Image: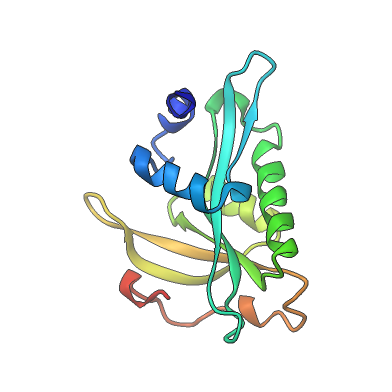
Length: 166
């Protein structure tokens, strides 16, 4: 029942929406990475969902932001920054090397916000978002304390295709 309360947030055209099973899978596997901000009246103001993934041996163990969004009427209040900070703290506790996310190249407001939060453009992913036409994404990363040499955020020169992403 609570999942349907997200409609006011998910109606934004820049918010990626998924099927109910996808949300439930994340909630079951990575509950600590699924956080919601509610108003005093119980309205969903925003949420973030993510996961921990990658290889420790290859220094690719990281937190991943699958979705972060704030309802239009609650934007510019610092909620997205607070949600991102919480996800970064969880990733630090899991001893991740970095946090990454994908964002539409055309979403300048989001790209600028992530840069202000310390994220860098690691690489361009060609035709990551399907549509008419397909749209490229930035893979943005922020190094965490385990990555002392900041190797995880050294930008790649050439773009990659979605199937080339590990």
